[in-house]
Structure formats: C-alpha cells, structure tokens
Image 1: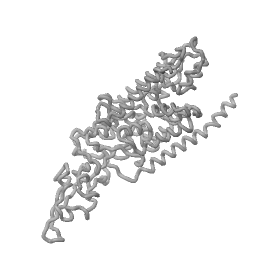
Image 2: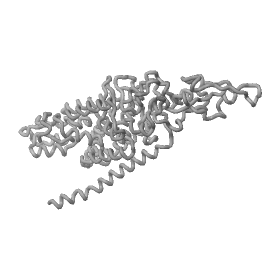
Image 3: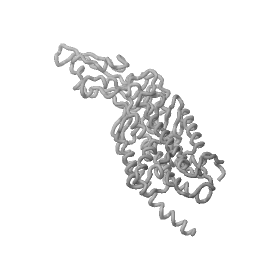
Image 4: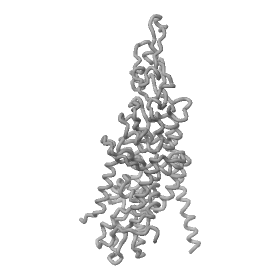
Length: 259
Length: 213
C-alpha cells in the first residue's frame, strides 16, 4: 500500500498538537492554556474568534490578547485559514479518525455554507447571553480541558459529534457546523498558499476527490481547468497532493487578490 | 431561470433558520439551566461575576499555573460558568501566592492585573455558618481556623467571654472581620468538622471589583 506522505506528516503534527495541549497535565510548564489563548515559552497567542467575542462583550482587549491575536491572524492568513482545522484542531483529529472507519463514507454530507451561519449565530448569541459563547461550548476547548483536567460531563458534546458523524451526516461538525471553521474559512479565502495542479498531467482518475475533506471545492476547479483551488474551505491538508499517482497536484503560491 | 434562482433560497432558508434556532435554543436552555443557583469562589483578582463571565476565555491558564492545583474548571452542570475557573476550598483553598501566578497568566483581564498584593484580594468572605457546631463556640479550645488564617489576628480574631453553661469557663470564639478577610478558604479547609462550620461566602453586597484597591 502506498503511503500518503502528506497525510502521515499531518497526522504526526495533529498528535504533537494533542500532546502539546496535554503537557500541563505532566507538570511541564513551557505551555499553558488551550487553543483559545495560550503561552508557549512565553510567547502569548490567542484565537482571533475568542478575541472578537471578548471585544464585542467588553469593548476592549488587553495588549496580551491584541498581540497574541495578531500573530495568529498573520500566521493563518499566510498559510490558509483552515490549516488550523486540518493540522492543529484536536476535534478534527478525532473526526478524522472516526472517518477512517469504513461506514461513514456511505453517509450523505451537508453543505459547507452552514459554518458561516453558525458563526453569525455564535456572534449574536454572544451578545444576547453576555458570555463568549464559542469559548463556552466549544468542543475544542472541552477536549483540551479534558486533556489537562480530566474527563468531565462536558465531553458529552464530543460524544454527540462522533455519533452524529457515525450515523447521520459525514463530517458534519468540521464541514458544516463549526463556527471557528467558518471563521478560518473567511480568513483562508485570501491566503497565498494553495493547492495547484498541472492540467496536462491529470488523468481524471478521481483519487484526489476521494481523499479530499471538501471535494466540492476541489472538483469544480479540476473540471473548469483552473489550475488552483481558490476556496478558503481547503484545509491545505495535502491528502490530494500525496495521493495523486501522476503527481499532478502540488502546493503553490498565488496572488491572493487575483482570481 | 431567474425565477427559479429566486425561489430556491426561499425553499431552503426556513429549514436552516429552524435548525439554527433549535440549536441556539437548546444551548441557551442547557447553559441557563445550570446557572444562577450557586455562587462560585473565583481565583484572586477576579472582576465582578457579570464581567468575569464576559471576560473569561475559559482557557484554563490560571489553573495550569496554580502550584496547588486549587483552581478547578467549571463543569457542564455549572451552566454558563462551564470551563471557568473555580476554587473549592474544601478540596484545595487558595494559598495566596505572593507572586499571584494565576493573575499574571490571565490573558484577558478577567483576573485583574491591577491586583499586586495577594492579601488585598477579596474573593469572598469567611462566615461562621454553623455556630451550633463550632467547637470553639461550644466551649472547646479548637481555634484551628484562627491559627490557619493567613491574615491571623486581623481577618480572624478570638474573642473570649464567660461560658454561661458552666459559669466558670471561657469561650474562645473565632470572629471574622470582613474588612481583612481575603476569602481564600484556608479556614474552611482547616476546619476539623466533617461539614465545616466556617465557609467562604460571597461579599454582600458584591463590591465593584472583587479585591480591595
């Protein structure tokens, strides 16, 4: 069996991220926090969506959060917003593994556009309830908390996501419901790093679409002979690049404002 | 063609709006249901509860840096406070570290960095809640809470008076002075009774920000 180098590499990064989130439980001190806000050997980072919620609620941001958010924003704006989903997020790792089981592939999938609705609902509810809603119910935060503070009843949301993805809709959380995914999708629309392909090498075997997490943004580009995937939905996971038997796909840089 | 395009969203939108409303409604209910029934002892420097719930990122950094693991994280049953830091003195009180690592770790200002002196924090205040159970008030020489108090002789003093039951012994009653009590909960942890006679309770009325500035 051919090893998909990109997928193997990504899996290693995902597991390293999971271990990083768990380090405070081992008593190590170089990392503290979770993906909402963290410090890695003193470098302050914070999630832009978390910062946005705090900004909406209190009207101000601390200097720590402002600089932490700026770093994260620039990082994902350059690499592609949903790189966060594909390479960093622990929930994506869990649902990736669930999707490796044979039967979820027979399920239908939902439209990708729901995420933006979910993002808007989250922002509205943040203002109505007076709490940062996504930080409160986020399965990402709950997973990270479970890693360092032990299993708790909040993990029910992870169980619900796994069950939904096993029996109802394939990859429903990461593809269609996650507000943070919606946020990073918007950010990734303008990033220079994209998947590109050589139309002369492509034999239309369809392997790349089978392994793709969001095939609906890969397929139209292939058909229309545009040589890049411009959508912010692409997680830059590299599965298509690694699987292509003709080596027709690869990462490339684009001018983000030119389509 | 254009008529079809206009009709299509009208057909699809209501299902989506319904879905969003059901989801939002359900999470509202779950979150609201668990909240409002209890008061939570927050780490030092925590701003007033309403603001705290707005500012707290639920990132857990205060808990990660707490050397005593005194800071726990709110559970699903805590409703709106899920994922927020809470101190349960009977499990582990706040030992008022002189460098306040939890306050320094907080990125969002939910734990106010203006707090520099741990003895100035006002997380709550100790209250003798079970006078009839308190060994000292019963006439025994306990006073464990008084000895344990980090602000001994200010936040807790011992007042002695005649034990009218015997007519010839003294009662050494621990008395809490709210003005100096940090609300750290060390007394609650130290109380020798199975169910503590001294517990930390909210300041009434709650001050604007929960430390003495």
